[in-house]
Image (tube, rainbow, N blue to C red; front, top):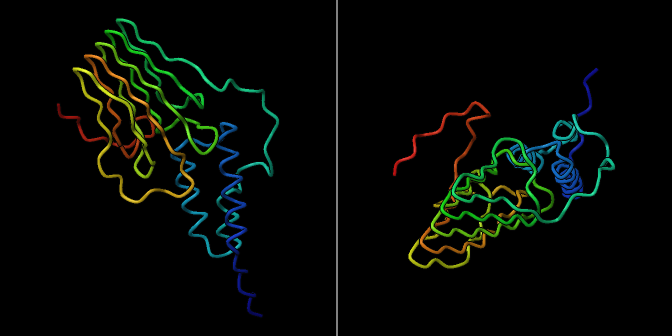
Length: 195
């Protein structure tokens, strides 16, 4: 006897799965890259089986987790203040580099909620913010005797990926937001950076 065809899913079921993926990312279960990939798979799913596979390794609902501070600091005074790999940035992250440098790599970061705001202040120093392809970046601010630069073309934005808002203020320094598709920690190869 032939098996019945798999049931097709609705837009509401897709949105429910995407909501669960965002919660899982906020709980620290998924990195930004994993969230982006799974959200794309959820929106492309046509059947119950395809959609179930996207959340199969996650608990049914959000778990109780301790309250997390809304804002925090990354400081680099005549040195380095780097964050990379699997880490949890604050929703409002403030980065200050004074005669030093700071690198914030968000490609494997666990971001709570639909957006993150980074206030970057570079005084005779430099700050790099690295995001994955498909992540929307909103860059604003000003530079005096320095430069703030945003990412080039990103290709299509991944639905459900958080928005990264960077408020950049530079004095004889600079803030650079750039895109790289995958991190070295995940095993992907990056092209060498050219100055």
